[in-house]
Length: 239
Image 1 (spheres, rainbow, N blue to C red):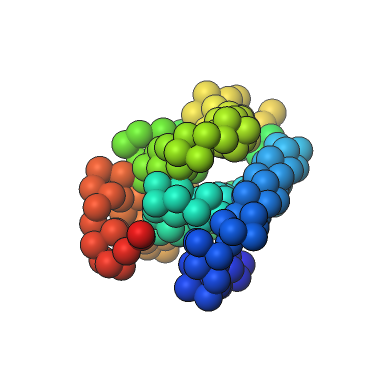
Image 2 (cartoon, rainbow, N blue to C red):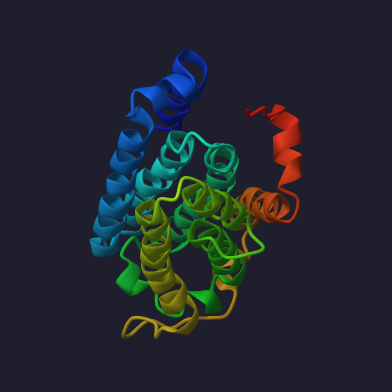
């Protein structure tokens, strides 16, 4: 899916160019299509109780931020969109790693059954929370940098509608990720379930699962604290 989004952005920037797209009024049209996808996918994600399904629809929404930023055709918007390629990659892989660890350890897929899970899987829930905060756009995690540039890009083109979409979608992100975090940290375990603190992360294979997701979430924080690193690595040049 991300390859498709990258290909669309590459065509817009390298094949057509920002000036040609602007002259044909295709930039703002594409931006509004992406905005519609962002909001629609976020709303659908809110209705899903299966954790992997919620993350999947979140991915559709988050990848549309990339197209939205590039379609603004201004440096700040394009920068935000391209930075979000890396930010989303590290944050979302952390979330899916966490989901896989939860399913592997508990066989639970329904968010409603994950109350109080932090008692048994504290590291997994902490990493999930960090990655979710990045998707929402809370500093100092990488997603904040993406959404900051996107918001500034919307202001640069004087489009309060797109700015509103970015803000509203972030609120929707907070709702559907926040539900998982609140249930996991503060919810009650399912009736009849006895939770023994830390037991589900004590085995060797579970510890091996934790290491890669911890690294991915740490990189999310790194991009949030030092966003210029990503721009230097890819040698981004925006006119």
